[in-house]
Image (cartoon, rainbow, N blue to C red; front, side, top):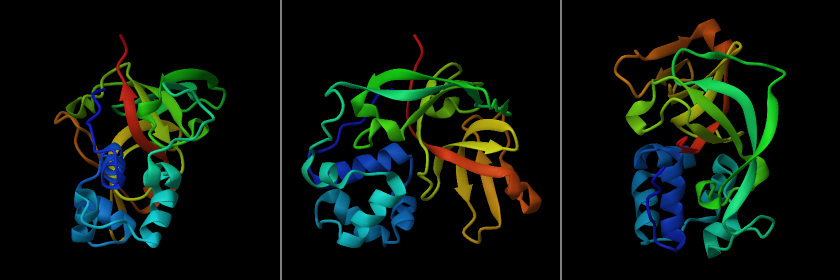
Length: 214
């Protein structure tokens, strides 16, 4: 996966969080409860994030505030690679794969740059099957990295419906009455969950990066 470059300051790191979350500037601002102009000014370096914004970033996106403010990362992992939990369970970029309660969990080394400021024990990995997300460069057999507990705003997520695991772009209706599961492939229609269907829907974690299989 090609990772965009950002300035090595607070504004650049702030922008990198939004980029990894796969959110528009407006959606990112809304997830933090601030005006898009304010969020844009932070990205441009015109102002620094307030204390409230810092707290929301930490809660919604698992951001290490020391990293955000100083650029320094925790010292509990290697400078170049970290090991994350790899769930030997496929997630469908298509119509869904059955969840196995007995799925094996292994350790998978990944570049530290892919998980940003997150601690490695707060990131999971799963293999993707299907072609419904090829529009963002996510293909069959790729390894998705996702952060359990990160659910703020719209974006690309690993989700489960009943016993099926999927990777989809998710749009949450502001009224809280519907969830739109969007594929990045025109061959797959948007799936809208409402009413009782929402009871079986669960966000497993936000997709933060992925790696292509050789």
